[in-house]
Image 1 (cartoon, rainbow, N blue to C red):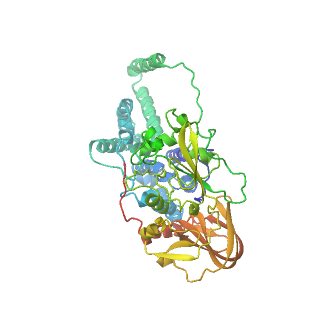
Image 2 (cartoon, one colour):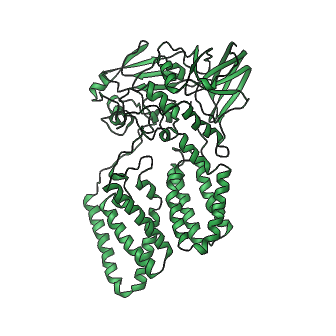
Length: 555
């Protein structure tokens, strides 16, 4: 179970965060250039930015930054006129940072796995598509060239500060893109230049067309006929090209994820956590790997084959069942695998070291596993494992005359695990060694850092269970003394107990709840954005556990 900060929208039902932020960046642009300096203008702009941070704390860093730079350049061209507004804006930013809203994305960025392991786990692969807009294709280069010419004329002839600001942004991205493609410059953690530039591309078009209008009005009859012929010629070439290349064949498009046949089904009983599903496909030496040419270290071809439902040559087309994670999520079936920007560094460390081989390549956000740890699956809340290799408890089944295996774990962790034996470790590596031992019994033993040891003796006999409850869980337990229950829930210092029970990190990544007597406790993720101290503690845990202790294979 992976509780996350609450969001104002869901990715699949309303709109992607990029679209939401795009709308608000355009609002900031219009307010900045159309409204005269005043306090309400500052409030409106900061309100738009605050709204995006509260809705999605990570994407504004990427999509709002270019617009803020653009508006900053525009204001600098007339700094005396906007001086008061600049001061008020900086004052407002300082207040919002102090209350935690603007601090939140910066602290959160450091608390996610891809930031923690960026130095050696996630390497940016240099690609042509990551360059700026001008270098995506030849047409873009022609557009940027014409746009720069028009904006230079409009900036000089009409003394347009707005055109000058757009021109400065175009030159900035054009120069950076050229350096990126012609040198060894790497973006590393940064997104592609094209992504950074995407939200101000409409401004390029709007201001370029406005400059063209001014040019036509200024030169009047002298250029009216040439402009008309060039426009008609361009439209003619476009229409002719489309007519010659148009495909009149009827295309039926539909998504291939939510309605496909699955290897399991959603459990109707919601009164208790029903367990999760996990996969082990593409293991070395299996019949499945050999027949689909997937033998060898785990890489992108494994991901494409199992997760891409759009092509008949992939898993869905060949076996008529979907193993794409999104198919299970859309049908309300949780998986052990994760795919999101918010993945915890402890999650990455745990699964990278226990459920993958040393030479397997690792994806940035998508977590798929290649090595089984049968004694750990139940602890993690796994109820079913579908694999291409047999286990000592697996049942064989066939898909398209090929053998697969299903392993069920009847004693999966739904909140009832109450171990009494403490295993003390000094760092994450020692925890991995302890849990990698097949004799490790999560029902009797738990792993805890020496610094986090609590003195109270855990002797109570108890029962417990959990269930989902609105971006959190409800833990129900009964004990005749102080006891610890290990929950199949990713730990964070931002987790809070409604009843005030002690929550601790156990087994490196799971949540332990210490309680006495009868409880019905709601555990949720809370704190940010108005209180970010818990995120800072998460960052401190990375250092306390020494997570950065080795390098990993990468494509």
